[in-house]
Amino acid sequence: MGKRKAEARRWFQQAFYDLKAARWNAEGGFYNTACFVAQQSGAKALKSLLYYAGSRKQALMTHSLVDMVQQGPQDADGLLMLIEDARALDLHYIPSRYPNGLPSGYPHQFYGSETADKAIAAAQKILGFVTDYFARHGDDELTQ
Image (cartoon, rainbow, N blue to C red; front, side, top):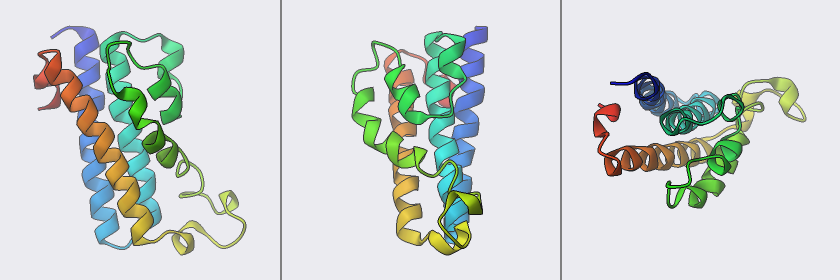
């Protein structure tokens, strides 16, 4: 396996486990943490795709899923259809973790199960897209 594919696999594997952690946190009632970890899962899955495609370093340095979706490979048909999922996950990057990201209170007070379920579903959709992309390119071993 080449260096680029090996790096893509590392990022994908962590995205997979982050999604599991997001579900686990939601089950435990830690909805804000579930949302942040779902955001991380989606971001890592998209970074995996960018590594695989040989994207420029600048594209890999962002934390914005929207930016990653927009900078994805040309042959990733349907990637732009994930823009709303990317936007939804980007919203959890700061407020899910920091009290000063909210008007008052603290993140645990503001997040509920419905929000966490939506974030997890968005991350799952992104992970599924990347899985399918690798399979279409004959590299489904990257997801195992």
